[in-house]
Image (cartoon, rainbow, N blue to C red; front, side):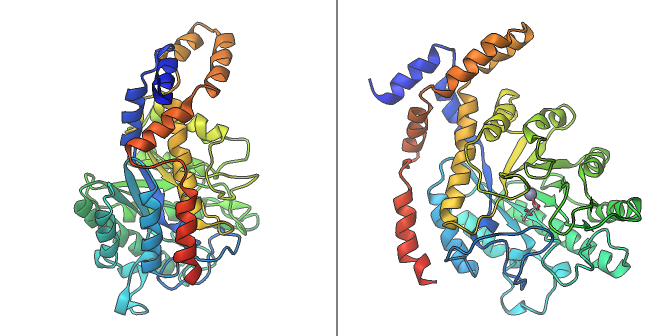
Length: 413
Ligand code: RNT
Ligand code: ZN
């Protein structure tokens, strides 16, 4: 008996259908964030990252232009099994001759068409989009949609509106709805004298951005945060603000795993949102002591998040995007490690006897829940993972491929 058949039998003993798990896994599209490839700098002029987020490390070979990022991403996607999406930011506009002539409030679809061509060429399911409210001279005192300055607010509202239009075109072209995630860095380093004013201005700006869009094409989401570097005391778009805003407007909340207090976990929040909303969006990241955006790995919280998605039958309702940026290691390796870790976590959750465990909880049998949870940690999931990869003509030995690419392509940058 081969290893896969052996594993299948082992899981079958607990009523777990491994074939069904594999077909579900294949169908979950992870949205891969392009910004791990170039340390979140983009192509539209910004030469340093601000907004309270930061990449650290100086591993050589950062993608410096669209050609380099496309070639890196093509290699990355070739090593990822299953359905895939690409997540891009407005600062990745490919402006060509218009560089320096057109600003973010006037971006149109044509600057993103090369991304769509690329995504189609390599067979991606869809593209998700993000307005970029950072790394730009029009951020006044670090503020965008909540700025007290009318002109500043207007510029960023127009950027938001332009992005909604671009997203509609992307969705139409890709034949798949586009999630537009709004995250702004607005906040204050020190204790503010007015907490409500900025929030009311943000509310008004968002209302304007969301005035009209095609609900069949665009899925708007809002991403809260607790603090940023240099914005430690007050964040305009905090959790309570966006939870309320999203529920009033009937749009989506996006939970970033690094955006809460260190002992708070997103795995516990997903079900609360599922109870009230059709869709929930995620930015899966790995906060180490703070919102550090480390590469996602198969840790306990990732497994717990995956369990929440799987056992609530929510693989079509939870939109999984990744959000991390590590400049201290090979960036392709960072990409592939994170996406595969997310998929491994989903597989782990799909291979749990979820119905049995739920029943045990209702019978208040936490002894058995603990017993099985521990037992399933050592079930032969590795053999099922290998089979999943084999069916996609991939294997778990992918490092060599990246090392080769590093020697042949990246070293010459
Ligand atoms: C920042 C947010 C935001 C960004 C990306 C680049 O803390 O997590 O999602 O990381 O949009
Ligand atoms: Zn995020």
